[in-house]
Image (cartoon, rainbow, N blue to C red; front, side, top):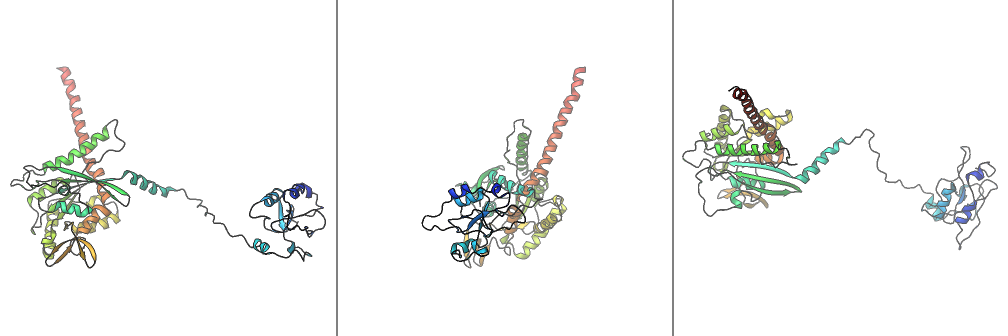
Length: 432
């Protein structure tokens, strides 16, 4: 803007500029004239550039493009207040000689580096996907609960298999060894709880053992104590739910899964096995396993599994994972692979060995080492995947939404029948 422009003095006042930016004492030099004639100007003591008013009209030339003092100081503050720009003398026509470029001027004339600004968020983004992270944080704080029951005769390796599954001494015998092993006169239900943590994930694991099952000469109705225990846990949970002042988080003692151990006879299921699984498959998730499968040859194992599968189908025993609970085609495809392996031929061991420089869990014999986690030796790895790595939450969901729900409906019907019976007898009593 030319000094003769009518808005010259309205746009900028020069008096405070001169007083706020004194020239350096060691190198005073006069300010050269800007390319237009007349009017005051001021030389910046730090950059060596002229301060001129910013053009106020679109047809006025814009002299210079960089701030006077990018570092920030009195000069830049005064220039900002007065709406000034640095005018490079070398860019003006007719200005030569003592106003040659200095290294500081060359650095200032470079293009400013782009700032690392955060990319703007998508305009249509709402943030619904963050619910997954919220659920993860909440679950990590609360932890998880898993209750597993093991049923089978003594000597089938139930405690060893549980220790192998969770790679810890968590079975009842491992934690509470007894000096004298005896066969109990009746079936006892014993449970032990452990807190397991892995990579910040905490889980409260409860192992329910049933010593005495199938160890007697007369095993008639030996499944009844186990059935009663499972229903008692449902009843306890139901009473907590219907309580007026119920707890914020109800302790879950319901049996989520039952591992049923089948002895490796090589023939077929015994009547005891059929009767137990037929009755309890309606109230709990049953996963049958062939215990100590290393006592069978590969041919015997295949034949034995085929006989067991035929017995399950002929007696209408629906073990986990049940076909009717497949949610979609993807679940059906995964579950079909597990259903083809049932019953799982497993080998348990909590002893470590070195094989080809690698630590393994296995059983060492004269003719070699049976690796527990080697799928060519046994199907322990598939059982672990089903129970822990892929289907644990699904097992808990079916327990809550199917088995416990069936028990709850049954109990509510019984309560309604009792109340209706009392109401019907009331008028008769009044008439009498």
